[in-house]
Image (cartoon, rainbow, N blue to C red):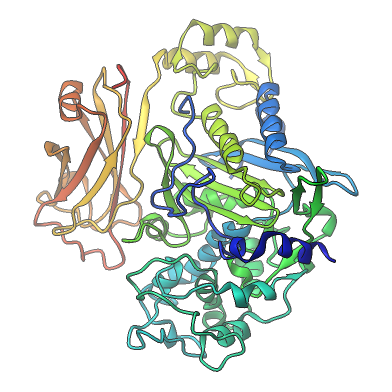
Length: 591
């Protein structure tokens, strides 16, 4: 019996129905799969260049922690990297990418990344959107060579937006899909499969291919997302995978990234495994593929995938390349009414922090790719073990939380990560003075602990500030106020800075946004500081006395409301308008 068939028998239909490349959004067993609600595990502490790895930080205690969690979770290998702005500031590979023959995992090991393929496919499609090839609410039937209709709502056109946000009413029916998973690459062409699955009379069509109301009901779907990715083919005349190779992957120098195993050196690809408790050993799943490969069959490394995440973190810029426009990135990250954006989603992490990105899960694959807007830190983690199906998502999530703590940029002078910059940090810096590749005292990551690092520590002396970010909220205009809830807020001991970034109708002195906190008016922003629908966001700040802030937020939870004046037209920016906010201050007493 092959490893694929052995594992099919082992998990049974009940687990299979969880979904091909199901995205868990949370990281603990038993948590909700709703990406708008599922949290990361709580943790005791919050916490263009850039591809030269010789000056990265390495920490034996951190290594030991990660290895111990891998052992608890039965993960043969794990590769991870941490990004700040446009630089990788840490990367490492642990364990074995292959057990027999033995092959060590590195930062360049290629993994099946499951549903973390979706942000990549969405980026490729939305590059064509930026070029004016389509509009998000256009019916796909205006472009596709075959027509797709929801049988219960035949008069409701399915749009690009619906497909990218999982609201098209397309369902993954696993009685059909599971037998199509094969060892190696699927030989079924993408267009052929979609027609046979979605059109009555097709070889894979059933009465269960659709459910819910298009544009209203959320249902996570790999088939629906693959239909969205497929639309690249009629738009360009090129096969989906070929288009990605020649455009997105070539642009970002992702030259060892592929939708198919046939495009890769098998010696560079991690073997997926599960841990068999009966024999107390790892068993290979083998390399598998399916016809809906745009939803989850991409293989790449953490270093290459970082270039996709950088575009999300930096308004569409990555490796000095313009991958997407800032407005399109904001559209991807702005949740629909159902909570999912366009190929990415949000989740609430420890201590109220917002994270944006995606995760992935399949047999012998668990992947995270998220960034925290408050300090623009991104984390990517790939493993070739069954963290989710094996019941060990908690340990995988704890590795993520530890990296988020270790590499927080909210207080870079805090060398020992104790929440304040003090004499202990100064002593650590003096002890590491000189050449010190990868040490924590190297605040500016240049491989040398010197006077620049000393000045950075002295300049941030005292209690570390905290920051909370809303991410993009839109549209913004009269009749379109935006509301966001901030949680786990300690008292402030100094003035509180609200930083605003917006692309909207804000070019006149009368075009203002009123800022409320738990119903208390804090002030107004923009007006003379704004402009009409700029290509790059307008930026301004509002300084609020700590006494005003503390009295408005007595319980640590704050409802932030951004209410435009009547002069702000939500439709002035024909493409999209949005605003995001970062709140930063020095904390005092925890509530």
